[in-house]
Amino acid sequence: MQNAPSVLDNKIYVTLILSIDRSKSLDEALLTLELAKEYYSNGLVSGIDLSGNPLVGNLCDFVPVLNTARSYGLKTTVHIAETADQSEDWCKFLRLHLPDRLGHGIFLTNSDENSVLAREIVLKSQIPLELCLTSNVKSKAIENYESHHLNYWMDKKHPICICTDDKGLFNCTLSGEFQLSVERCCLNNEQLFQILMDSVNMAFCTENVKKQLSHKIREYFNSFIFDDLNKK
Image (cartoon, rainbow, N blue to C red; front, top):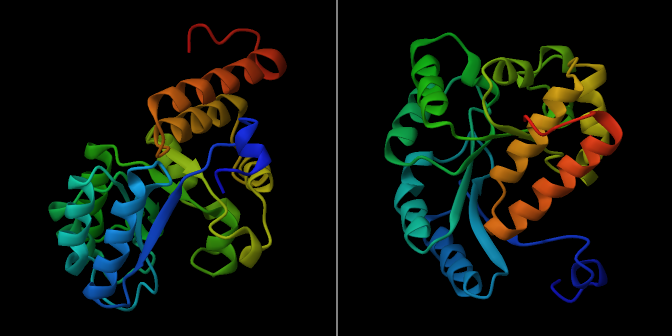
């Protein structure tokens, strides 16, 4: 991977995030963690992801693994609130471990007491969210693009990034997801710019890489979208 032409030409920067399946055992999770630790030192791996079938397993069971990962210097990202009936578990988990990013968060905007408490933790801690429009629609987690929770978090000025979840499985592209965010969720250019800058800030990469990415984004928007970004 590190010898790919696009990487060597500095056209793309890639690190791996190793996934822990919440439906599997803690022993398997620890094996993944040790593998991540081994390859973290050479820059190949940058973090740990906790995901898998949200109806199986409990997030809290994996808190020791995630906390250990952080002690190694690894970043953590966790899929949360993918089903509506586990809000008490979200609260318990977020009180034990605050991930560097959260995946989906579809039902964090629900109105029950535990959803509100979990949402308050996310907002107060400014934990960035990875949002996947097409994935959520095709999996029937939400009814349509217009009702996606993207706009809730944008209204709160909360950091988010737009993702595909799995471009092969859901037959979507990142560019297409951004287009949908404009056409179906009515985002404007200012909001797109902010999402891209937030995406840089929440990326699991070095500060030098973030600086380069921020410069490229500003340069593009200055040239093609805005007249002046000096005040942004």
